[in-house]
Length: 88
View (cartoon, rainbow, N blue to C red):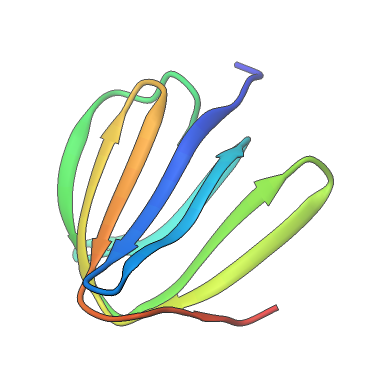
């Protein structure tokens, strides 16, 4: 299913990422998971690791310390415990 959805990554310091993306891959507590538009809603904890996402032809990655992820059909919200660092 092609399309975009909103990715928000929020830390106690504020919004770190707020972009329309095509896909997201994140380090869930039970293993890495991927999200595309229209994904079945779920809630999970995040472990420390790298979140990767695509915006057009560009792939971006950021390191997160852990937190909580809520995925909906047209939105993914990651609440993390501290500021993130862009990896590449």
